[in-house]
Length: 335
Image 1 (cartoon, rainbow, N blue to C red):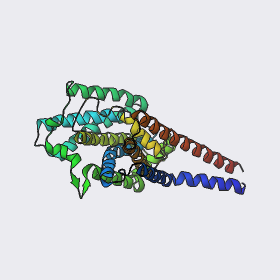
Image 2 (image 1 turned 135 degrees about the vertical axis):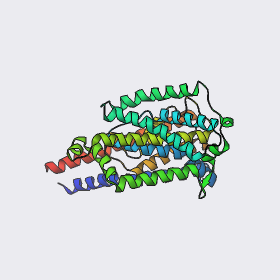
Image 3 (image 1 turned 45 degrees about the horizontal axis):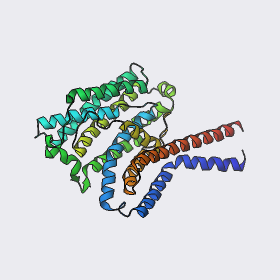
Image 4 (image 1 turned 180 degrees about the vertical axis):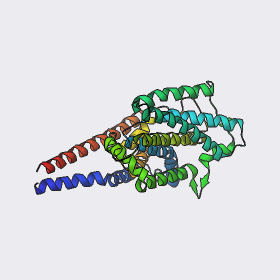
């Protein structure tokens, strides 16, 4: 193998391995440019709004990260979020004295049940994840409208204690941001240092080999979809508290934003590849774009186009790096 080929392989390996560093650098560079265009961007107040608004996306993206690692996908997360948010909002409206922690538990339980149903269809019945989650997306969305009775719950029907979930602080940090940090740290440890985390990677990398080595693929799939459901339920409570509104079409289409955050973070839809730190940065990049583009007076129509272009660039970048790296590895084995 020539020195030139070895250097090329080394560069590609470093790009693939340290992709998160490049993504972080891009976020910093983008922030500097936006700050130059609008000095209000890097103020404490705006940064607090940015991280608060990105918190729910981060929580959902972490769950989707686990699902994508197993070569799956969950298109029902936004509908699960809406259903759990609606049920929780109705509960706190009927029982205003209910403690906010119990409201969060209710939302998580609803989401967990939704995730278990999807996990059962995928792991036990062998239904393709995209088909199962697409069907359940309509089921859960329809259930949300049925539970709501065609009506929506507004801020006046919610107790102040429930709405304070999104406005209060813990250790000086907004509660939404604090919860997102806790979720990230927990799953960072879970995926990096636990046997179960390594099994999730193994199932996504090579399901057949994982099963031969003694890993129960069905249990792993049931676990990741249950976690995704639970995090969707948690996000439903946080969403309703933040916007003080529960509607049948809450977060409609948000599942695509969540998937985009994962792809931006370097997670492969083919399974087995990705880091949770990359997912965090991918979600933050979308958060920066959503926050900054209105500040620099970009048209709402162009905002969607710009976000789509960034996502497409990230996907093409992943594909090109992967193809060239695999080609160099093949040439190395042949030589």
